[in-house]
Image (cartoon, rainbow, N blue to C red; front, side):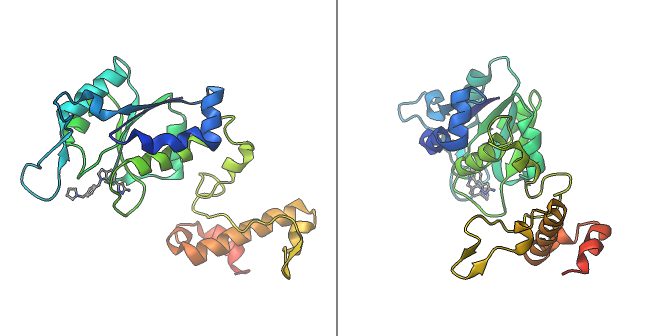
Length: 244
Ligand SMILES: Nc1cc(-c2ccc3ccn(Cc4ccc(CN5CCCC5)cc4)c3c2)n[nH]1
């Protein structure tokens, strides 16, 4: 997978050189290219922003700079364009899986009050353009949101996660974990400061372990994410409810 990232703060993406993503880049699984948006701002101050039409606080990012930058980065290609924004569609595990299947993603990191909307309109006629929110809070720009999405997508790529099974059991993953968060995890020692590991996990009985884990996942979902629990099919809830 090729990832292009356009930003006025390319240094935000140094973390993509470490850990899982760093190794995927070394292996060639991921081809990450970070670009300084100001390289396409030709005035002496390399200006990328201007005052908003209609008034209001802050500044808006100029469409000309973005247009030159995107044209230069994509050429005749057609990557899927992801634009982080507080007003976008929610970023979910399902969307992460969808993006993990794409050969080429282009992330456009806005700053200030955002990017002139005509940029998304211009490329929306030629590319798949998704405006995406990573949560209901306002960041100062798109860079952190891109780091979140690249990590969530990158770990789903073949060979990136040590154990592919882990992604199958991810919270929220479509299938058996849809609308469920994961339960508690334990490792050695079997007793730590008087806290014992639940005996079922030491039993070696895989069926009972699987059952216990689903019960715990359900218990935690009901406690921490009642709105997800409400979306569970009654049969699932009922099967476990007797135990909650
Ligand atoms: N999930 C999530 C994503 C983001 C995010 C992503 C990209 C950018 C680029 C700039 N900003 C700051 C920022 C500040 C104020 C407004 C709201 N203004 C009200 C009137 C016009 C706009 C919007 C945007 C971003 C924020 N935040 N949270």
